Length: 398
Ligand SMILES: [Zn+2]
Image (cartoon, rainbow, N blue to C red; front, side):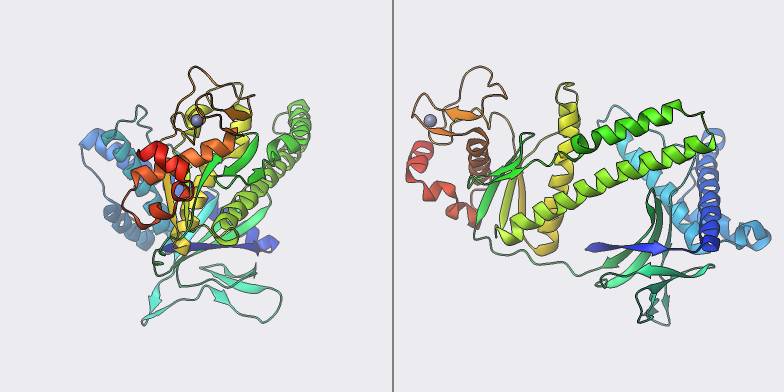
């Protein structure tokens, strides 16, 4: 399993200038390698592999100081990126997706990556310990850059990425960590996500929706308006553009922080070993123009990714079930409500058995229930909600 650790990096002015030049060089190399692959195929029907390009790069470095003055490991990573872009394109061609999406030429590159080699059987350590507030990150051909290592990385470091974002430079150290064994599940919970409340568990607990975008919307609107009033590509235009990017970055970081903490909370503080959610497709749901902003703001897709990741990392279980009619079905007697159920109706009332329950709570129980049906035979289905609720078991299983 791979884990990446993110740290803030503080390059000096001179180093920053070097890094910008490096990003520019990697962009050109990327476009050159992509063009080579495209044209060789178009005019000569020759397919160029990643290894051909790496060999080609070696020759270029021997003859041309323009190439040899840049770190080879970064250049090789760029070639790998081209290869990955092409591989994804071929995957899409084979699949059912309508848009094949040719890899595009880049107008800018925001990050550089290099691998950490083994020297005499010992892996290079990218960090120099100083014993002070900042440690030093070793960057090939540049030297040492200040890094705020707020926590130690675990495992065997394989790769380092330096990235420029709106609010500064960041470093990602990718480490190889041994896989965690899956635990024996003892408790499970179904989770219903929504725009009203961020989530409701099958135990009836709710987490409020923080609506980060809505909170920052007025600021963003003001900045966007300011930007539109500046002369295009003037100094002030760039300044406002940076301010806007920073504000957007803040919103994205707030969202990430909240989602990561909520996912961790479910597994560790609440103590659930299994979490079940609906298999939603937010990209399709966003097509509803009345809900698009709210759906984009809650970022369910990101939340599910984090749940999956935390489960994988800590040996927990995560499942997705079919989302059809979870809100409209009674969790007690399994009868479905006919017709549409408006989003403004917050309470579920069953005409058949008289159950009155919060709408999302009812859906969350249904989700958990559905997972139990689909995954019958796994250990945890016997300790589910249904066994705690004899009436439910009777109604469903006869
Ligand atoms: Zn009912």
